[in-house]
Image (tube, rainbow, N blue to C red; front, side):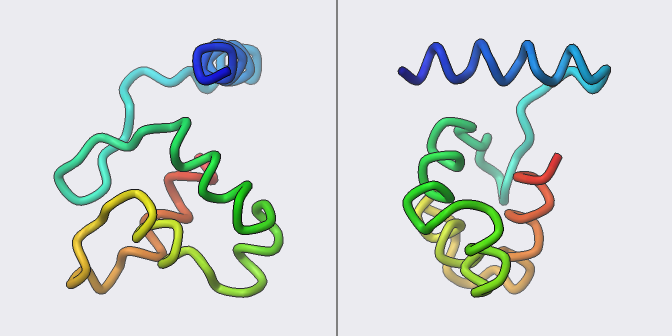
Length: 81
């Protein structure tokens, strides 16, 4: 399931001419694209996470550093890209 997701994500990004050339980092850790997708899905999808301001919860789910002040914003931006 994870491999199929990653293949379709990379294909989608290539088709819209914004290929994923390198996996983004959050803090000093590379983001697991499957985990961030599943974390957002678990909380109700993008619109709900954004509307209820749950991006910090997504960041925490990814194992982020608890002291980061811009965690929610950075997590949302990476997900949107």
